[in-house]
Image: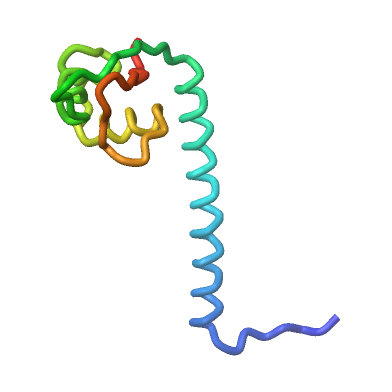
Length: 104
C-alpha cells in the first residue's frame, strides 16, 4: 500500500469540515421531518367556511386567540401552517371555500 501524504492541509481541513456539516444537516433534517410526521398524525381538524371579507390573517389571529393548538405561535407561522394543511398556493380565499384548521 502507498503512503498517502496531505499536500495542502487547508484544503483537506475544509473538505473534512464540509463533509461533517453535510452529515449533521442530514441528521438534523431527517429528525425534524420524522417529528413533523408524528405531530401531524395526532392532529384533529375543525372545518371553517370562508365568508365575505375573511382573510387568512384574520382567521389566523382568531385561531391564535381561541385555538390551543396555535397558542403562543406567531400569526405568520399560523398562516403558513393553514396554507400547508389546505395546500393553498396563495393566501387568497374565496367565499364558500372550506378550510381545515388543526386543533387539539
